[in-house]
Length: 150
Image 1 (tube, one colour):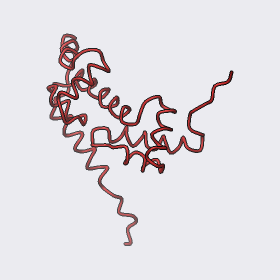
Image 2: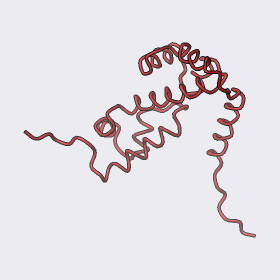
Image 3: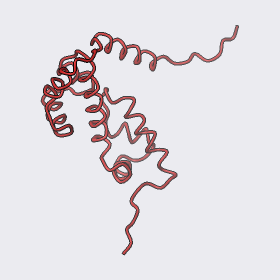
Image 4: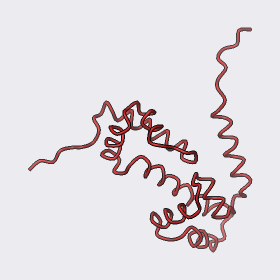
């Protein structure tokens, strides 16, 4: 008995990667299926099927997982509160964030943060993290002006 490879063909992988890279860059912003499919230049449902077959998760589950990974980094290395981390990584509801965090990590964000606070390592001040994010957003919003005609 043979199994059928349900992954995307190689010529479509570049489009899926483009959408995945977009999700990686914009995980803290509202990202929806229409936006990711447009980035991949595929129809919404075709994109959804190919993404799930190729990466093993839906596009929105992928974004959610990226947010949780980033939240883990922030909870380990900063002095931000759980609520501040929740909003910094793109969740709009603390309840949704906490339940998703617990489903992925296996413990609550508060207990995760408390476990790493015991280690006594240096923490990055939250104001630095927020300013870094502001600087990144400003840099990506600036468009190159082209060549000077002096």
